[in-house]
Length: 234
Image (cartoon, rainbow, N blue to C red; front, side):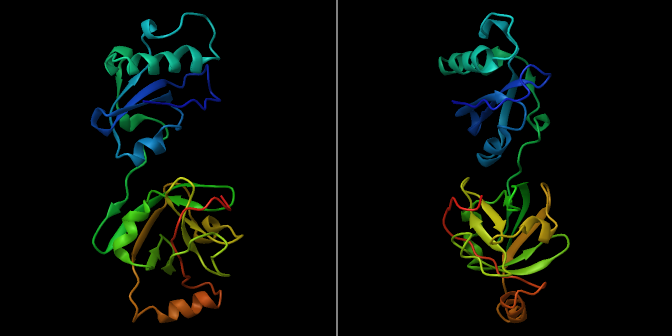
């Protein structure tokens, strides 16, 4: 059971929800404002979802600004005590939750097809990619976007990304992010939430020129590196 409440739109028409994940092994409770969507995507999607409408499982009162206390907390407590999910309210289509459940990356033998989940204020572009998704592709990668194709290598930290390079680092959420050291990577690569990204194995013979261009900091292909989790530059 996970209860999460970050709810600036409390009291509006945003829905209070409970989302079943892991084939019924866990339930996430919170507002339908996008807060739960990344967590649902990371565990493989939702099996069921309900709107928390049943007054029997809420605290009585007229306040509309304390849903953490009056709606979400009681719902989580009742679920933890064994109340069936569907007792709390009508079922919802999980695909209709806001802003939409994050899709898993498509992992193939020769490539990983991913998308940008979000872009932070530094310009780092978080992908729906677990580091293990890339393990079979080695340390040198080919990064393709709608408008660009660049050579790629792995980097352990933001500061380890060289001048003119794009780095693939593991961010504080445990996901792979495209980043540059003290530069706006998303702007340079024309990326925004929902942008498609493909990562594949870099072929040694055909990409030597790409590496030279990256080392020179040119506008062509750039090296990218992936490594351990870091908290800096997020």
